Image: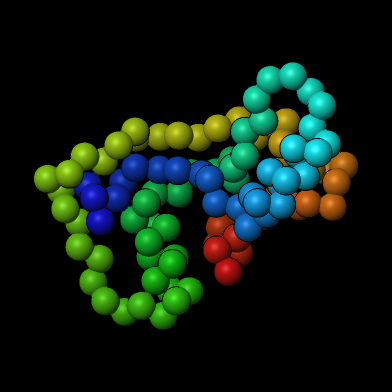
Length: 99
């Protein structure tokens, strides 16, 4: 794994693909629609969750000579969640969204 694994992200949703297709046909507001969970999860914790789900018991090796990337990428997903409340697409976060 590149870097230390401390960088955080929030882009995991099992409904992302369906949300993008649905929004393409139904989103009529101007501006951006951030798609994400709205919560941070470190890359290391994400790797550990994936390991648990797939049953991997090996070691996670960090290459600390590589950069960590942006420390935090938490997005405001309030518009997404308000919009999804009017559709049949419920937001799914970690770890359920990985299964």
